[in-house]
Length: 206
Image (cartoon, rainbow, N blue to C red; front, side):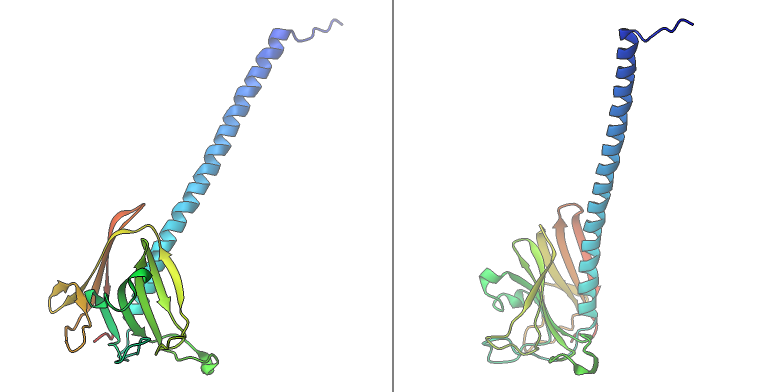
């Protein structure tokens, strides 16, 4: 029986078809991989915003009326302060303080750790990053350590206000005043979500 082989033209056509199918397959795999990476990146950005909202909401909800001493301060500061009144609280090279507060709910079962269940917290902005600072002891001395956690980065146009007596104000907690702030509004521009506004209620804040 006569057997006929493939001609060079047929081989070249088959190779061309195989190359085209392979290219389509590689393109589809690359597209899927890129889509997965973009989805993961988007999920991380959403998680970062939700973490920020959860942390600051928890801090504000659990504000408690306990004045604290800052390092080198002659008098205790109020348990909740925010906005312009904080301009002298932190060194200019340490960032812009947004709010300082004392909160409860820092669980310490059976008092195992050498600390209180209350926590002194500062939210500040440094080089476009939103930072949450806390320390192991309420009243700070010169050697008291603290920890800074970067919560959000690359923020611009940040502004904080406080709802007091029916109007939004640029500060709250100035000593010897009774402004009765009940909510906080934080605005900023996010590199992916654009302009954002977040409003949080205050718990036991004065």
